[in-house]
Length: 194
Image (cartoon, rainbow, N blue to C red; front, side):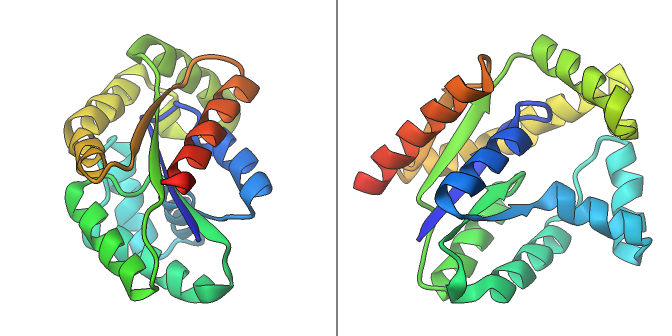
């Protein structure tokens, strides 16, 4: 089973690359952002709590996100060829919880691929995306910078966590979609060999 963590700051291209990876490897896409936005659109209590935090550029608490991921893993179970985790884990605590959940399903993370993009390019991409998406957290430069800063401060230790396990690869997130996709696929193939 191929289990991939696709990692990177907001605007790095995780969603775009996920679509290509899902098609090529037949993975189940688990995007915490999509799960949270679905809860927000449905107006659930969880969605309202999440919206308040997300509009401020803050992360949603671990226990909420872990619970959502656990239900999706159970839902898809053994029938999946693998999973692509997009936007999760964001903390070492979440990474440890994910490892435990996957172990309960007799599997583990194959590799973590981090898309590396500089702050100015991220801001440019998100402002452009905000014009078409309508997402308030993509329309304000100060909120974008806060999201990227929070990502850098809180999620950088996750990269170290997977690096210590020999499961981390940094990929240049600037280039054509196809070039970046080819680099990610090359890393996946290397990880599957080891």
